[in-house]
Image 1 (cartoon, rainbow, N blue to C red):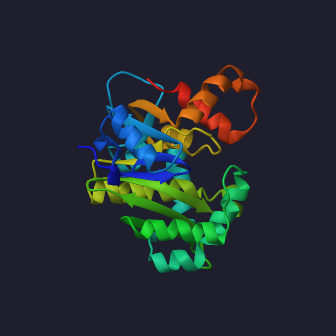
Image 2: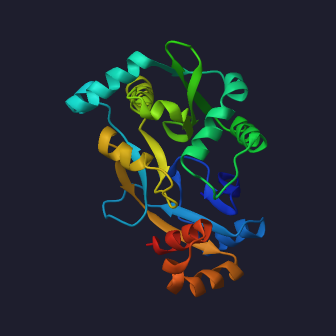
Length: 267
């Protein structure tokens, strides 16, 4: 059943705020009702984990096999991570006090320039998280006990979605493999301990500014849960998209390209 309270406005686009497998297909009238409240477009994904491959998907993992599901080389990297870091759930107050420099450094490292990241933006993000159900994970350097990694996890009834994640960039290049340990421990906790239906790393990346999703597919057996995608635009944006589509390979603006790429992924 449709309720506009089940959708949230993020970067001018309405998107579903509950677990992706629960999202209904919206009628045009329902999309128009959302757009009357603001925003430039409605992103509607439905028919979650369908049998037919489509151009849009959520990246999920719904089984946990422990160390046995990893290659010898991956197990070696995991052991390095566990010797170097302590990965655990942390209090949100610690996130507010210590996580911003980590997230800021991560944005710089990945050269994310299509959206701002400063202390006010980060505080607003955490304020929005407080309105929902979130877990927070931290990675601590074993020697210094300093917080060096952070991940926010959005909790649904029987699934969760990995959200904003960051790690002090200096640890990416010293053979401690922090992301291996982070994802292993979170997968173990939610899939094995809490018996969630699945964990997700969100929908298909549109900007592809990081290699996190290919990393999870290759090293942690995440899979593509294909779904249908429909987009409804404000009238003026719909005209602009149709006019720019033939020239999308000539457009260098990342935000414009993201909209055009997503438009092509509809089914």
